[in-house]
Figure 1 (spheres, rainbow, N blue to C red):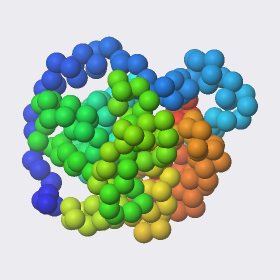
Figure 2: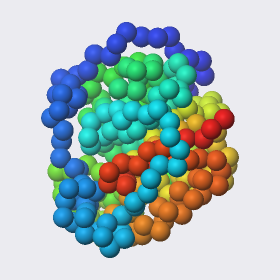
Figure 3: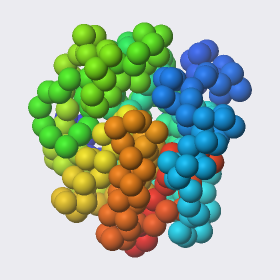
Length: 266
């Protein structure tokens, strides 16, 4: 159980050597093979966009914003809309928490990070994490329980998914999954300033859950995964429309159309 009160401010963060190197521009390549389709400069991506398989839309509202973190792990956030020491849930960490570290440095954010992947957990435990960062070794999804987590085809890559991957099912693992409402109740939180989702296709069921349960969140930063064969672009369009109906508007769309940031005005 994490105390509900805000922690006191701490000095500027000292990054571990590995993280410092990434922040200086040594950006690691796109993780899994599927993610190569997300690079706007690739021929495969351009073909998909011409075929209408990639998201192409303009922001629905203009707000001051900043992209924090590396090219691989960065997300766009409306910094000026955040108060001091905002409460953040960062779901899907991998081996890049540059966004979380930069957000903590800029705002003094209290970040709860979620990832059930053994390799990610092992990597995070080698890092000099600030006191304001709390790791939870669970995933977020549409149910409470345990689910099979399927690894990428290339063992050198890290991003697992709850979606079916027949080619790697013999290497799948069982991981604990919780609904966002369950987690917030357990941690004593009734409002989030920022929710970041990079969960390899499970974002759609989390969106349905937070809308159905009227979860109070100011900003939602999502990496959509309609580049996966099992996820049509129409599913991303539907998710955006669902968020629009409950007051969220898009304030940022990345060049790939996969990272989309939403804000709900008070």
